[in-house]
Image 1 (tube, rainbow, N blue to C red):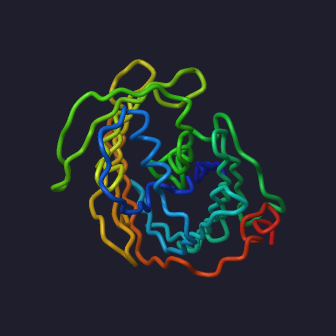
Image 2 (image 1 turned 180 degrees about the vertical axis):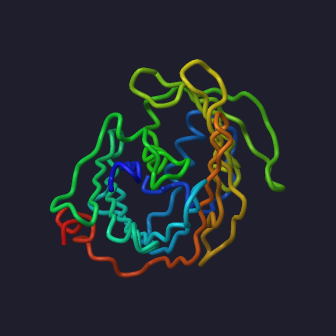
Image 3 (image 1 turned 135 degrees about the vertical axis):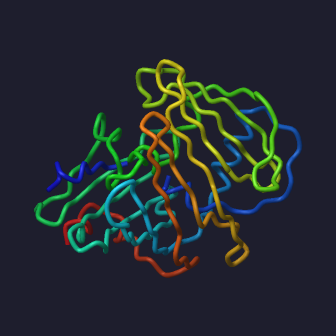
Length: 255
């Protein structure tokens, strides 16, 4: 079952889903702007229902719980539809300035598995998202430079090129990040492979304000090499709910 689904363990706390409005900022260097956008992610508890549509097969419904636990962001995801995938669970534990811990459990397995290395490069629930795309990269692992300005969906953006300091440790060769410097929202990421060729493109389609928080409701990830695409929608979302800290433990995955 695991082989057929090509599951991987890799939304940060799922930073792609949510981003918090903020006051305008002055001129920053590129690295500072990226760090502000990462630091600006919501720190309140989040409960959401997500709809992930892969290139092939039925859409996946995923329940998300996320909050700050002991100063770090934790995210728990459980697949509820389709029936064949029910019981697949993921746990992402962010560590500021260090690699995140990532766990996965499938319905028939007795234990949760801590995943790392090559597994992070596999498709997340058969989509064009990798597991590594579901967590925020470590800001200090890259160098940054401004490479242009532009506009996306009526918003002015700064374009920042992110180059890994240790390319062998990263999945992508580089990233071109488009950031709205006023609201500190990442609206687009363009990924190159290790040879510098266009590889994948993540983009935002819909941003809405929910409880005073600018929330990404609709996003896409395109694989430019095989011309496939996945869509990720935030169908329902609630902020500031009561989520027990025990939700974010490997033991909870095994329940």
